Image (cartoon, rainbow, N blue to C red; front, side, top):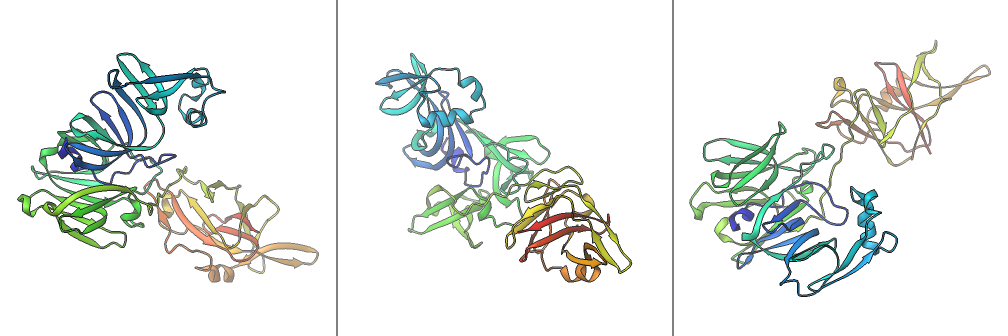
Length: 409
């Protein structure tokens, strides 16, 4: 399995775990399952180093020298296990179960699932361990959530001149799988791979920011390169194959494959997940909160645009970013609204709120902080604004002649 893991890099991005980074599910031939990631695919003597957030481990009775258990009900369950159980998909059913918590071969605070010829236990304490590469059955990666609009994809170039692009889905000792754009999981032989190219999903972020894990290449000469391996070439003679690694600053370095003494995986402290919101066509949210119904905007004889401000307003804070998101195919990549501050005027005994066409012209670029509105693959357009004064503002839709009311405090 040594070659299997050699192709696994830090460019697989999936769900973000509550406690640690979980990008892979490593299933062993004995049925053990580790949820975490491969740290070092070649830790020596056929071993590989992994980090796991939680695991279910099978161990033969003769290797489990000592097994101790204590039974707990829901109320008396140790704190760590109660927190885990609350978040479990079957949390309601777990409240009526008895938990056997104990130790197996010196490893404490584990949940005993089976105790017979084979001892099966579950651990939720993050840890590192060594496993034998030849005993790995498969490695899987979850599909990116639809709302996660950052991450990295791979393109595999094969010997038959075909290429397959998508999110890394997993591998065995002889195959690799990707989630293709059409939703199909494509599987191909590992021996057919000639080159792997990594591309960023979000064009508005750097490659480094979108990698939940990054590579550390240690060379025979003592050099070290930290970043994302964005290209792996296996097309040439062994002496001509190479990695291209991109660091946090965007600089790229080519490293000959034979010069690499070790390749390690570490968590990326600069990782920045960008999560989208799924909106129905025509829907608008401000700071991820539903907006109130828009109010009509009318023009008076003085060519002032009058707004009825009696209704409820969206509360925002001055000097903070105001995120406006909407789904409008006709305005994808465009600023659908104009942000304008209202002023009060008096006509005889009547006080009304309004803005003018001059205010509209002067507001252009005054409040918007994002250079260009961004539209995600889900059709959600994001525009960011910032206001520096308290007062009532409107998000004005000139085409519809209506506005959403905001109040900055």
